[in-house]
Image (cartoon, rainbow, N blue to C red):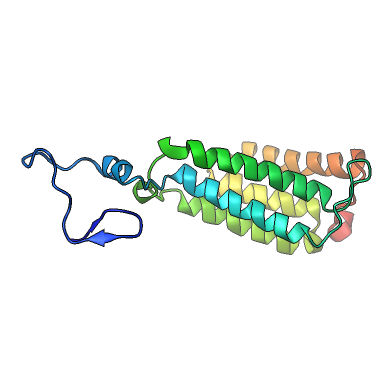
Length: 183
């Protein structure tokens, strides 16, 4: 079986250990010896850095403005620079997380349910209105995915849907879509 001695090279034999009778070191120790540790923290730090660079590149299409008179690209550029700084910090200090190769994907069903609810919310928001769409998504996530009691599910979903609608529509004056019968 080939031995990976660096991230880009493969050799036919593993390096000799000092004590030929001892077991090879754990995979993390071998990865540290190679200097190539891809931990979950570093993977996500790299992904966040890619997103930040993408936002910076796309923001070049808009005028930046000045500090006194900011343009439409000012806030996205500021947030992207902040995200880039934090992602570099995560990349630099992310060696303590678990190796990506050792991660388990036991929560993939929950992640897929959240992704599907987000897609449903995006597609149904204009047709069903804010309160019905958010309420239905929360009912599904809290009741079926998290398996909480019916009373708790209805109270939390209804309270968050109505409360966030009141916050945005009533207090902040942000127009939100209304569904059938003005709901």
